Amino acid sequence: MRIVAIVMVYNEEIFIENMLRNYLEQGVEVYLLNNDSTDRTIEIATKYLTENLIKIERFPKKKYFDLREVLRKKEEIAETLGADWYLHADADEIRLPPKGQKTLKTAIEEVDQKGFNAVNFMEYTFVPTTENPIHLPESYMDTMKWYYPFARNYPHRVNCWKYIQKTPTLFEHILELKRHGRWLVPSARLGGGGHRIEFENRKIFPQDFIMRHYIAISREHAIQKYVPRLHKPENTVSLHGWRASAKSEDFRLPFQSEMKLYTNDENLDPSKPLREHLIIKKNA
Image (tube, rainbow, N blue to C red; front, side, top):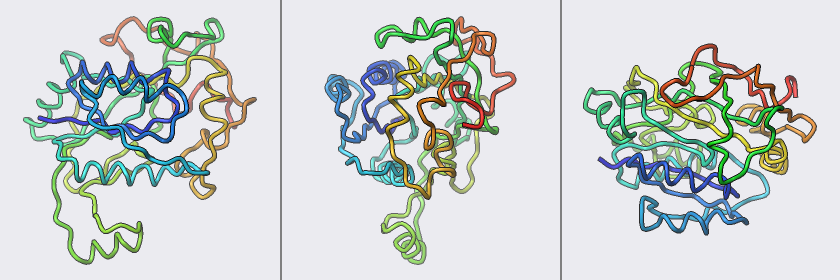
């Protein structure tokens, strides 16, 4: 079984190696879209072209970041690449199987065998704290020990799915051309800002998988990561939330008392998930 994570990157030199290495260990291939990175992201990623990295494709950077355009590109890759399962993923994530499973690949194979075609990931968000505000690129996964479960709704991250070919009608092709300027009609669509895969007869596996999400390794890194990016005005609220409008002064570091202490993946606590991220001030 082929499982492919489709990841778009822009200046992710801090996260890219851990992400690629994790997928290699998990038995997952990676298709990389490079949004014209200017740091060492691609230099680092190139080492994995002889491992689990299938391809590095340029996805040209424009004045405005358009998430809808990114999601449509990922839908097209999933439609034409020929893998069995796909993940819509980001570089700052570490995707893992549920408790009791060795790798993502073996876990997804079991999901498939049981007749399910989609997987939800429970998100555990790791951020610097007031008590421990700065972490290093080479060691943040060892030193950033405080997290909170995050889910605005449930299920929150249904973006791992089985490819099930669909034969579109002529009307569907014409409608797709009119709405999105493309003839290709995807068998599955990424909705909810990419958090939710949508297709007919979707059947979500009842056990959540694990996603460790490392937003930033310092307050300064968070500002550098999110503030300079320009978003299309019509997409600001609906797709990006705080990321599209946050200013430098809106970022904060939470106290450890607001979070949970990480010991290992087996003991991650999904109870009482937050609906807003702690690294951004409320009402920002």
